[in-house]
Structure formats: C-alpha cells, structure tokens
Image 1 (cartoon, rainbow, N blue to C red):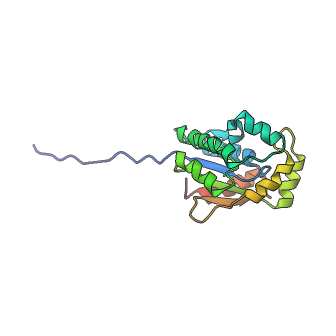
Image 2 (cartoon, rainbow, N blue to C red):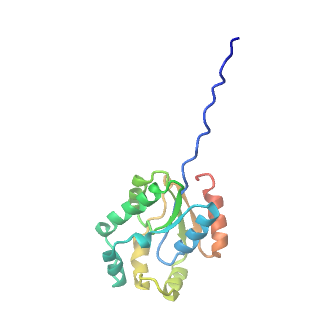
Image 3 (cartoon, rainbow, N blue to C red):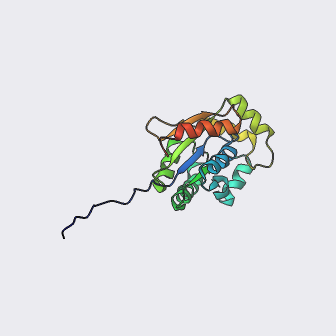
Length: 179
C-alpha cells in the first residue's frame, strides 16, 4: 500500500512588533506609547529610563546631549526592542536619521511613529508639565535637531493635536501594513 506524504510547512510567524514612538520633548511619546502598547498587547518601555545618570543630570542642568552622549543610549534602546521576544513599543526621541539607524542596527524590524505638533502646542505642553527632568528650554534644541522621517524609513507621522485615544487609533491604522 503506497502512499504519499503531503508536505506542509509550519505557518510562518511574523516578527514581533517593534515600534519607536518618536518626537521632541512634550509630544506625548510616553502617553501615546503606553496606550499603543496596551492596544497591541506588548510591553511598553520608556527610553528616558535607559539614560545613564550622567545624561539625565546634563539635561536637568539645561544642557542638550551630544551624539557621543546618545550613542550608548541609542544602542540600549535598540537592544531593548530586539531582546523583547514578544515585541514592544518604546518612547524615544530618535530625532535624527542616524539615531533611528542606530536603533535599527540592533532591531532591524523597527518602525517609527513620529508624533508631530506645532511649535506653539509643544511649547505650551513643555511649560505646563510637571515632574520631568527635561526643562522646557531644551525644546528649542530638540526642534532644531529634529529630522522628520524620510520616505525610505518605515513609519508614519501623526499629528498630536487630538486626544491620545484618537492619536493611537490613527497610529494603528497608519502602521497596520507595517506591523
């Protein structure tokens, strides 16, 4: 009795979701990132928690970080995403293309959600938030450093004028084909 074996392959698993919610200080990265992670049922990380103490003290003193300050931090941001086997969402400024490239060196499947707002709205938020080490005065240097996502970078840009729940809904729709 001869037979044949039907060859089947195991279903291909999709890579874990790796999203960086990026933008300048006071854009709402942590708020939106946390809600986005909750909706996607993945862990949320805040890159502010990954800064070495020296970086935090420098920013608290009103001094912007330089690329040398950021390099080990960005590597750790990327490794945090790469090491999370379930995927994750991380709030991280990722202001420049080279910073996003550094994150993707560690976690190549990363996509970016750029939270964008008017300078006036961002300034208002920065001046009225409490308990954050980043003084409102550093917003100017962040806006000067910001390089919006380029066409070849995986991600989407979302306006922050709406409430966080709507921003998350728009983000999920905008990123749906990427994650």
